[in-house]
Image 1 (cartoon, rainbow, N blue to C red):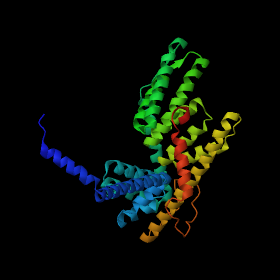
Image 2 (image 1 turned 60 degrees about the horizontal axis):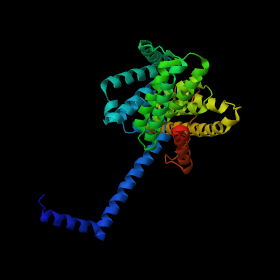
Image 3 (image 1 turned 180 degrees about the vertical axis):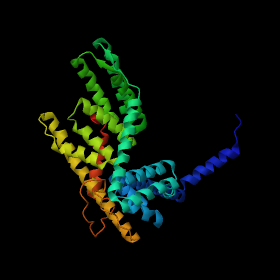
Image 4 (image 1 turned 135 degrees about the vertical axis):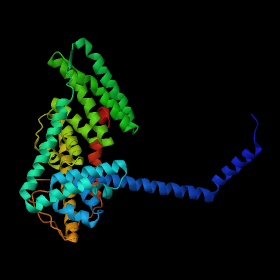
Length: 376
């Protein structure tokens, strides 16, 4: 190969340039700026973890033009409206389009105008429309479940159970390796593959089924942890439900399901699970520590939900006052229940306190769990 003296000379000069003190200072400054940007992004992601659906929506609605705000704020008490708008917000975040532009879609605006007119003229009829909407959504979900092909679980004798257990355990080990590397999407895929055999087959007797369920529960718990990392909340809830079928008193799965439901905007469902955790009594000595810690996390999360709802309440009333519109009191902010109290005059800071930072880190650390037994 023919050498090129000119190229070698340039490379040598370039290396000398990189070693100069001024160049090193510029490089270090660029690295510092990049780290600062990454830190700010991380802080914003953690702040989002502290904000429920209603608060995120309240913040986003502040960017809408006044005419859109005057239409939306009087009907924002309806959970149907909250769900529709938050679904729009999530879709715009995924697609990268403007939330303001999406909300001004003619079809969505016509529907909101109709709800607004019903709310102003006949609040009871507006609640009836909301009830019918949720009923129809539920029917659609039930219909999808009915249409889904039924999977009849095959029956395996004890001699054929070993491959199912081995495959599930090995995929769990592989998933744990990816999890520790920070490759959470790949870990989630491996955990879900590890669950397949347990979903397709069952044992011939209760004792052998117990062996299958023991491994299945472990893989499902790791699936929950990875799904929380990837923010696949529906997958997390499904895995929590599967574990609770096999272990009804598993407080960790109850907590994770509450966390996932909160991120999906299901505040009542989330609160019910958290309150269920606090009511549970543990008699097994080996479970006392885990139950005690999970209860601590549940209390912390309940405080976060309450704080997020209060912040959303303040933002909504502040904007409504600025627009000179009235938000009708039709029940709790999330639909139904007693009317909310009047908002406090002072607006609490949206900045995370040290207490919230510590609580959030504890929440996510416990939710993710280190895979395997060190993970769960």
